[in-house]
Length: 271
Image (tube, rainbow, N blue to C red; front, side):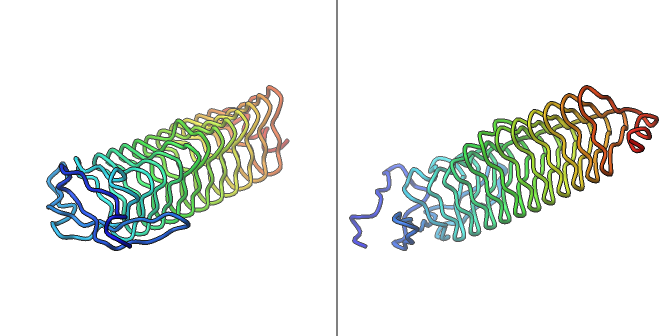
C-alpha cells in the first residue's frame, strides 16, 4: 500500500505511529501501531516502551493519544479505546472501551461499551448496545447483548451463560454454566443463576437467592432473601419465594402464591 493511503497522524500525537504493516478484515483495513514514547499508566506502571509494537487500529482516532490507553498484541480496534483502557491479545473492539476497562483474550465487543473497571475476556461476546461497567467480568463463552443499561458491581457472567434483551444484572451477581437471563428480568444483590436455569419476563431474583439446575422463574415472579428454586421447578405469574423458601423437583408455584421460611418450603416440596 502506498504511504499516502495510510491514515494521517496529528502533529500533536507523540504517542504512536503507524508501522506500515496492515491487515484486512472484510473490506476494512487496519494498521499496526508502534509506541513513540514510553507509555506509563496513572499508577506508574509501564504499559509500553518506546519502540514497542502495538495492535491494529482503524484510524488515529481509534486510540486516544492523550492518555495511557493502549492496544497491543494482535488486537484489532474498529471503534474507540480511550482513558486508561487496555485492549490486547486477539480481542476485537467495534464499540467503545474506556475508563480502566480491559478487553483481551479472544473477546469481541460489537456496538457496545465497556468501562469502569470492567473486564471482558476469554471467548466472551458483548454486543447490541450493552453497557458493561463497575467491576463486572464477562468471560468464558458468555454472551451479553441487547440494550442493557445496568450491568455493574462485581458481577460475573461466564461459562456458556447468556444475558440479553433488556435484562439488568448488577451488584455481585453470578450468572454461569448454561443459564439465561433475558426479557426485562432483574438479577441483583448477590444472587446466582446457573446450571440450565432461566430467568425472564419481568421476574426478579435478588438478595442471595439462587436459581439453578433446570428451574425457570418468569412473568412477574420474585425469588429473594436466600430462597432457592431448582430441579425442574417453575415459579411464575406473581408468585414469590423468599426467607429461605425452597421450590424444587417438578413443583410449580404460580398466581399470587408465597413460599417462605422452612415450614412453607416443606409444603412446597410436597406439592
